[in-house]
Image (cartoon, rainbow, N blue to C red; front, top):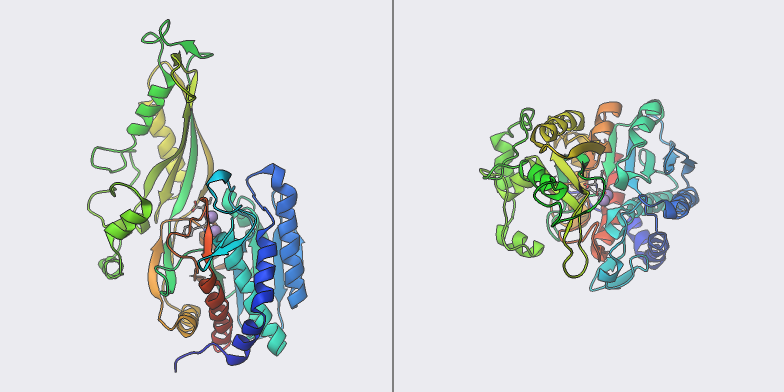
Length: 459
Ligand code: BES
Ligand code: MN
Ligand code: MN
């Protein structure tokens, strides 16, 4: 039987549409930028705001302090004997800078052309909030939920979730769940709902190169003193071979080859390299030889320079030999790579290639394990039916190049399958200026999640 979005829940969400939009607006106005201490009070305020809303809809809610930003834990356990599902999301957002590139200010949500523009609209406040509203629909209309629910929202996802895995481990008994559901990713295309089977992991480094004790006149000293900017350039260049493979010894050792069935499934997705290229505005695509673009993004590891700093970068010319150079470099990981192993390989590589005459340090800032899930099981099928009911189309299975560090921890610590049903869209500008969430996806997403609870209750 084809699932539908239950009419009573749909009617509730229809009736309360304007109020819900107003609430999301208020949530998005709180600049909960986890990376910035000057926003610590705002980040705390976002946790409190979310907790108050969870309490209002009928969840037993706590704001639990950590050594970093607090965790919001909201529970409803009124269905003894029924499964328990844990919903995870994050209420923190990325810094909004550069502010001058936003068409409207990042913390003044604005709808243009069916898109809700605001920092955190899609990553992840909008996607988290639609879960709160789907729960509200059930509780308000029926006074009950079909299964037990734990909603866990953290405020440190965008800075590496340092305190979350220990929290999950410490509270494993309380957080015990039959499945974990997360909406913090994108659909493959508009109107095409998606369930994820893979996320890449991450190992993030800062490389510092120290040369002379201070900047020097590049004429008086250049050619006789090793230049740290050039040394850093050599170190970075040594990380890839001429064809685009990573040249760090041992980097691919733990990488698994994906089954031909999965590669065929990826090839069958409606994807066009030229559209993808045009979306990026890049003159050409490039990457590891022997793999398609989607395989490069979902199934292969990589290293990227995220930032570079050295020497004179102001107006005009300045003849100077810089004292130091710095790069932020992050590696995306795939099964069975681990951030710990990659850290060792990266440090060994840099130590090996670093030119004499400079001091180089490699610091590991944060990391997360890659994840691959089995697209099967009762909760996966419940999610699939619910997405089809709401979007009128069965979901496709997709991978994802980004990382949600806690996903692997949930699977490992709780032993529960993780269902990733995202409602973002390609081009949504997450982490960038003009981040947006499709208003339609927010609306349909609420209905899909409401239907998911209905379907989960049948398990
Ligand atoms: N929601 C993203 C993860 C994501 C990215 C899902 C792209 C789907 C598409 C998450 O908030 C995120 O940005 N994760 C970070 C990792 C974190 C440790 C900073 C990432 O992937 O860079
Ligand atoms: Mn996110
Ligand atoms: Mn993010």
